[in-house]
Every structure is written in C-alpha cells, then in structure tokens.
View 1 (cartoon, helix red, strand yellow):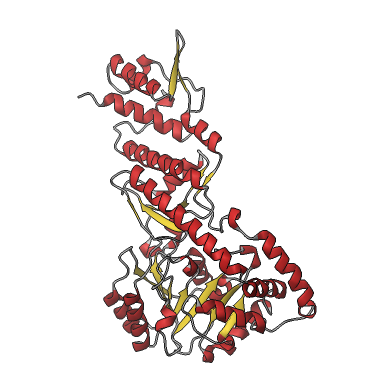
View 2 (cartoon, helix red, strand yellow):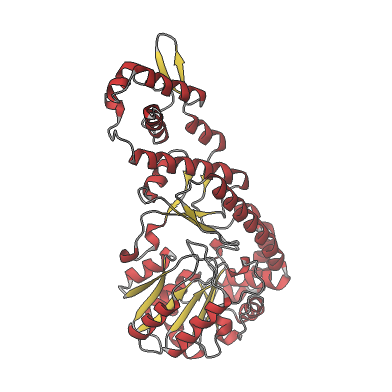
Length: 458
C-alpha cells in the first residue's frame, strides 16, 4: 500500500495549521513535490485530490493548487475558544445582586470605610463566614477566622512566616498551583515534591518524607487539584492528617473549589483535625468575583498573632467595602442561590469536556476525569510537547495552558496540557477538543515523517 501520499497530505495540513501556508497560498507543482518526496507524480496528484475532498485546497485549471484553509475559517466563525482563563464564568456572575449589597455596605459601614478596620477582618463578616464554612464541614469560631486579600496572600504569608514546629521545608503535590510555586521561589524556600496522579499520592512515600525532611507544612489541594482535577477520598484525607500529627507537620489545605464538589459525603482535611494541625484556606475568587479580593483562612489559635503581624506588614487590612458587601450577600441567602446555579453550570461543562475528550483525542493520549471543578489535564504522547500544541492552537484562536510551570524543576513534565472549563462557551467545547485532537495528530505524524524540512523552501 502506498502511504507516501498520506505523508504529503500530513505535511500540507501541518503547514496550514501552523500558518506556514495561509489562505490563498499557491502550493508547489506536482512535479516539484514528486521530486521533493521522491515519488511518482500520480502519488502527488492522489494527495492533492484527497485534500480537495477535505476542502483544504482547491485547484485552478492551468494555474495550480491553492489553500482554502479550513482552520482559519473555523477560528473566524467561532471566534476565541478559551480553555485558558481560570476566572469564574462571566455569564453567571451576580453583578446586579452584588451591586445592591455594595450600596448597602456603603450605607451600613460608613465609618469603617474611612478608617483602618479590624486587622483580622470585620467581626460581623467572620460570623457569617463561620456559618458558611459549616456547609463545607469546617466547624470553627470567628476568633480563629482571618479575612485575607485573596487566598494567594494567605499562601504567600504562610511560606514566609515561622511555624510552631520550628521546621523550614515545604512539601507540595506535583503538579500543583503555579502561584504557590512562585511564592516558594520568591522566598527562596526549600520545597520537596510528591507525585500526584488521579489515583492519588503514595502514602508510604508521604510518611517517609514527613519523617526525614524537616517538613514545616504540606500544601495540598484536596478537591479539584489544579491542574489535574484530582479529589482525595475521605480515607486518604484521614490518613494524611494522622501522619501529619505523628510527625509534627502542619497541613495547608487550599479548598478553593470545595463548593463545587457533587459528593455530599466528601469532607475537608480540616474535619479530621481535632488538634489544630490543619490550616484551612477558602477563596471566593473562583466561585464568585475575583475583583473582590477576599479570601479566608482558619488558623490554629497559637498562630493567629504571628500571622496578623505578617499580614499587617503586607497590607494593614483587607478592603472594608468588599468585606461589608460580602457579609450582606452571605447574610441575605443570595450566595447559596448563586452556588446552586454555578455548581450545575460547571458540572455540565466538565461532563461535555470529558465526552469530547473520549470521542476525539487520539488513543495515545490520556486525560483526567474529575467529577466537576475547573480543570482537566491531558497527557500528550511522548514525542508531542505542550508548548507545540499551545502554539499551534493559538494560531487558530484556541487557548490552552502548558502545565510545565506547575512543577518543581526535578518533576517537570513538558507534555501536560491544562484545560479550564470556567470561561469557555458550552457550545464551543466540542469544536475546541476536535481541533486540539487534530493538532496532536499532526505534530505526532510530523515527528514520524521522513522529511523534516519545510517543502515551501523548494
């Protein structure tokens, strides 16, 4: 069977996809390509005929063959397909309701808005936060709750400040949230990694690291890991807390998407922690309004004063207006209604994304299957890098994320893509994955191609 014509087709498709051949470009003549690929003219004619059937090229009598460029047309027709942005879905944000709460807050908190308010956060907001956290199985008191300017601030402060165990090193899942890795780099902290897959972590390995590496705290995203989407079962969470207690290690639990968990029996690590071993962080940026810059952290009592000292040197206190508006929003019950709405939106999008991956991705790729959340990751074939796919898709106005920045150097993987469903339109998910699959196939076939040079140079 003559497969040379397939290689010619693949090479033309690659150059159309990466922009080397643009709409209207004239292709080399049949004679030129037959010489370049060392094949008969009939082989080239067959390749061109097949590409015409796929509406990628067209022929002009006595002139030659030209590019139609389906890729470019698809991108123009569907505009941007955004699997990159990780903010909440703009179409389901409660702008009008929250504007009402802002106006009320201005009226209610006139004095606080023009003075430095409570460093720990408005007490009335902390009371509401305690009630809200109960729905996430986090039972605490307002005195242990601190309002922060987004969860990133809390993470950054925890990296820099000393802990009661007197230890210095930090353990993180691999991969994990790149913002935390950045904080580690900036503070020149020593970090260890533990490999995470959709099956979880090796608990024996975790115990070994806790026992031997002077671990100050273990930073963990127990639900909907960024970028994998992995969720730990309760049995693993319980064991992790037991090991932390045994080896005097603190746990920093980043539960930024906990509200989206469809499993009502899933509990945070905090709920397995009778002794103040777990520091619980909750962000409102992904489920609510990122511009609000409000998050909350629940700390062991003996760490509160020190944390407040570090926070004071960072920003005195978090925005009083944002705090007042959030308090009114929580108290009114509007927040619960909003959560119900977005929980269904993200669960549906994730389901559509997984079905599309199942239908279109090549057999030699693997993708994670989270029950909900924002993130799904795709492991590419060994000879395809995430950077190549990101670049090729960008030409088609499809945006995905290279997850290599979510690893410590010694764990780095160059072939992991992160797809985020929060801001992509539901109707575009299928097309986006189809184009992604096509790119993987093209790059993969190019690697195996006998002719590495660009035939446009002939």
